[in-house]
Structure formats: C-alpha cells, structure tokens
Length: 470
Image: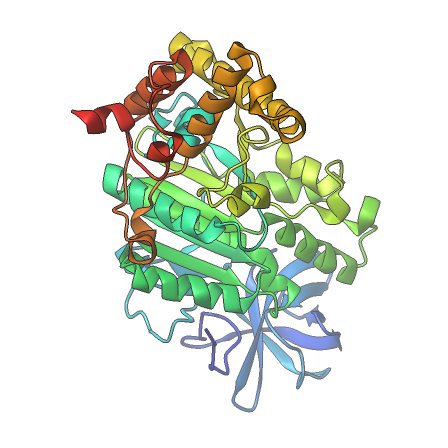
C-alpha cells in the first residue's frame, strides 16, 4: 500500500489561504514558525508549499509568537523563510458508510488505490464521551469461539490485551472474530496498524479480500517506515472510524490495535524533538495522559460499543516497564497465544493459564460457569504435572483418579480447538459458531466423566459435542 501523492496528508488547501507567518527553523521532524497571525491553536493544521509539493504540519506548541509544528512526512525541500498558511482545525477522516472496505493512513487519506468523493469528515480528536453517556454494565459479547467465551468472556466495551508472536495464529483469530461478530450481531470492525511492517498490512488486506470480509472492516495504518507523527496519530484515526460505527450506525464494534506500544514510542520521539524532559526509559513526560486520551474513547454507550483487542509489545520482556504498566491498567483482561500450543496443532493456540478476564465472577457469569472454569483449570494444571510422571514411569503407575484426570484433560485440551470459518479453504472443515450454553454442557460432561468412553480424537476440531449427537 503506497501513497503516491505529492501532498503529505489528506487535506488540500481550498479557497483563499490564510497566511500565518514564516519558517524560521527546520529539522527532520519539527519546524518552527514565526507567527505574524497568532489566531492558530494547538493541533491545527498548517502548510508550506515548495514548487508542486505541499508540506503539512500539526501545531504542537505555541510560545508567544513562535509555534513548533510536527511534519506529516519528510522535511526535505523546506527552508527558512518559506511562507506558512493555516489549513484547518485538525486532521480529519471520513465519517460515513464509505469507510468500510477502505484503508486509510493516519491523516485520513486512502492508501488502497481508491479515492473517496464527497464524504462527510470529522476531526480525529473530536469525540469525548461524557460520564452520563458511558454504559459500564454492557451485555456480554459472545464470540462463538469456545476457548475465549469460556476462559476469557468479554463485555461490550472491554479492552483486551492480545499477546502473541508471529506464526501462532493471531491473524486467523482476528479474522474469525471479525466474521463471528458480524454474523452474530451484524456489526463491523476496525483494524489499526501502529508502527508495524507495511508487508503485514498488505497481507491482512489481501487475506480479508480472500475471506470476503473486506466490506465488513475499515483499516487505518501508520506504518513502521512512516515518521513518528504518522505512527502516533494512527490510533486517533482508527478510533474515529470505530466511533462512527458505534455512534451513527449504533453497532457493537470490534477494534483491533497492532501494536499500541508503538504509539508510545512515537510519542516519545515527538516529545524528544520538542525538547521535553523524558521520564524513565525515555518516554514522554505526558505518557499517562497520552494513553488515557485514547483508552478512554474505547467504551460502551446505550446505543453501541467499542470492544478492543490491543497487541502489546513488552520491551526486554519487562512486564514492569512503565509504558506496559500504563497500558495494562486500562485493560479488562488478556488473551495469550502460545507457540507451544500451536506446535501441538491445536488452534486457536491460546494459553488458558495466562488468559484472563475480570468478569470471571459468579455474580456476572453465574455460579455454574465460574465453577466449571475453576475445575477445568485445575484439571489442565494437574495434567501438566502428570505428563512429566507419565514420561518417566508410564501411564500404568497413575492412581485411578489421576488416570481419569489425565485423559479428561486431554479431551478438554482437544475440545477447545475449533474449526474456523475463515480457514475452511485450508482445513476443509466447515467453521463452527458455538453457543456458550453448549460449551458449558460439553465441559461439564467431560469433567464429570460422562464422556470417558469417547476417544479423545473425537473432540479435536469440532463445534458442540453433545448437541452434535442429537
């Protein structure tokens, strides 16, 4: 996905431009402007023009008659003394039905080879929910994916951390969530790529086309090769796209963010360029504010919700890193994809011990669901201990109780694999959407021993077991 336009950003000057002043300093990311017209605000857009190229900037600081502004792209070709003009009150992105099936950059410009004509637009910073708009006790969002609905159920408006490396099935899980939420609720999704490889964005776009899901998703990318301004503002653009679906279409939206830590890094680069004193590990002194500003826009209202999956990079595997901690305090749970599970050929490859949700509570889910989660984790945990014993002494040395636990755990492990709709062309197995009631019935039957006579292989890549017998 490339942008071949000479204009750095999504808005072209219209009508008579208002001259603000002149450039007095230029660096790789920042310019300083001597203001002859001081009627300009923070986050306003301004521009300069050299021959046929337009350079756009966002005002970051104003100190008397001097403004510091961050460039949307490269500053090559700019020089001191160039005239600067006011463009608009902030970055804007399409805010109507036309967002579906399109890919935007951080500045509201399409980068998928298409052009949008005569669409409504909105500032990417505009929406802030008031306290009386927020709905905190939203309905549970059942995804139809057994392992998620059982071990990490979500409420509408939840923020879930998504941890997983390459090759463990993260993209397939994302596509299945998009498919199932659309199927169950008629809702659409938004994907935000923040500081990730442009190749991965291209791969996702092509896979969405192949899975016939492109018209159910809108995407925003601030790619790894872009400057810090682009990587920083991709989150705001993606949030605005999601807010349109929530507030205007009144839908329950899934928002996928990959990777929110890259936004923190980009903000740190901008902060350094503005000569602000960094805090630990070089982060911006406004770290908590910057994260809160985006996280607090992810909420439910009476009409719709935004439920987010946020991939989080953990620097040097330090879970106590300041940025990771600042993000984590906003999360309602986490889903961890594990390569060891994937190596067993079980997908989705979720580590159930590391996966959690704050609504695993008998008062929210009911006593039955809560009890079954506890029993399933106890059984699977004991299985890991027994595996080592069996490897040394053999299965015959186990007590009857441990023998039963060993094989029930294997059935449980296999049961939480699931055929995916979006992977049908590769597996040849029809996808399954499994209701939570069927999951509870099956897990209860396995743990109670009612299915001890069934071969463990019969539980691999199925939907609901008991329901399938009728």
